[in-house]
Amino acid sequence: MTDAEKGRDRLYQDLARDLLDELAAGIHPIGARLPAERELAIKYGVSRPTVREAIIALEVQGLVEVRIGSGAFVRRLPGQEDLPGFNVSAFELTEARLMFEGEAAALAATQITDEEVAEIERLVDEIAQENNDPRGTEKADRAFHLAIAKATRNGAIRDAIERLWELRAASPEAALLHEKARTANVKPVVEEHTAILNGLRARDPAAARAAMRNHLTHVIESLLFATEERQIEEARQAARAKRERYTRATA
Image (cartoon, rainbow, N blue to C red; front, side):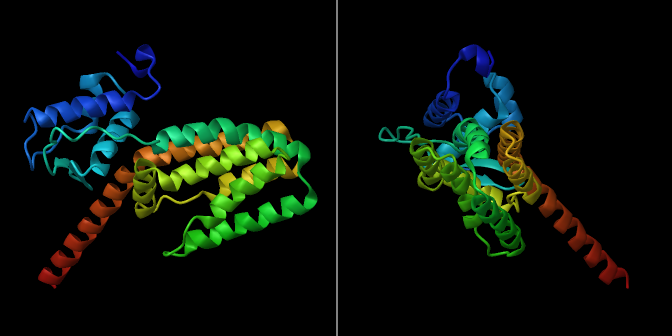
């Protein structure tokens, strides 16, 4: 049964509960590696994002530890007091942002002033600067999206989008996955933000909407593959180290 067939909007919670039951039953003892994401997706008939959200929910509770390149390992077994405590996940949050911010960008394109366009252009430059700083944050990215929300001239829309950004930091599950993405060097893509800016500058609602939706769709994809990208980079580093050792040994 697929995600769509089950028709549940928080399917990962069901999977997290199933995995919690398996841990409690001793199917996966302490130190054991959980089945790979693909195996769990096939076993339970769900998508890989659903599997990842479920594992992150267990990781937040300290039940499993995700080791880059190796998988998820059991840290401790749940007791009777351990009940899944679910918050908004990064995937849910970005899906909501896609819906709200896509339409907000379209509305903003009909209301935005030249001064606001100039401010958003400045924020795109700041995003590029933050990306070049190893210690950089994503403050400019947040300011970029909130500036667009403000340009809608709709207080309810602005407040809703501000709340979504607050949840990104307040939800342990969302914060953890975004931290993993940042560690894996997944950063805001300047070209995607520039495309949104161009739609706003042209006062083209359809272009602004499409650019925003394209951007947030890529954010979802980046969150899904963040750990894989880090694994690839670590594998490259390990291969370089081996080559260097071999070179020194044969010199």
